Length: 352
Image (cartoon, rainbow, N blue to C red; front, side, top):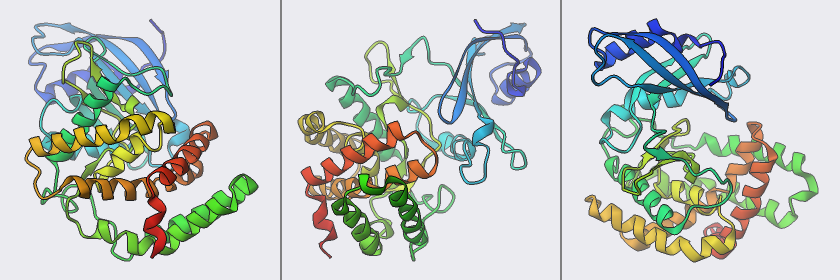
């Protein structure tokens, strides 16, 4: 156990009110809180809390996960935590059960940029893959893509997309110009470590970006994305069942579903592993969509979307570098994603 000052959201009186609002505490109250563990990630601090109660506690959690922001990430550009709080406030409540950890409280302060989440503690029943960057086993990979498909299917072409849930990007694509400016800074930073041939692909993607984004602006066969869909953002059940839970939702958005799949496989997996498993996992994903009622989106359409998503993933290292993600992460992404676009013939999209 660790001894450290408790954030406000970990104080007994705050937890009592939060759990009462959630309807899981009744007339009891939290009388003591112990920090069982605490760790810091790139963007947040994750604290496991053990709760003691004064009174009957049927249905009240014995422990919780408190996720709080880091002071160094509390800047207007990053807005760390803001979107994840919005996800649990607006999206999670409308999502079918057994896809997400339960959220007991979510708060964002516009003035201070302080934020927190109080989440279900799945430590005893679930685990997270820990051997980064080693990919999951084949059965684990299959379970993960099926879970992604179930979440995507739940929001597939939902009429709330872009209105009450998320927002559509503007038709004139201002993000293309923003990306062009960021790429200029990235190219200066990397220098001759970015070969001229790769630089030309970036420049061509920027030139053709408005045309390629016609797929997005069709607003058809769209869903909610995780946005950071690597395999370490999934709780897997210890009993090897199907009760997977997707977490870490700070990057969610409305977009094409295959962006999550390209991020998971093409960006993070080395070529040999990806080549051996990619197509079969896309088959599994598509079958799960069909099993959950998605029609009018055939396997060929999935392949085309996936290849285009892989091409767009060359933007990810640029944005990661811009947001001070360590180069040990984005440099490897840069190498892997260019190998993937060659394997999948993604340069064909740039032919104009």
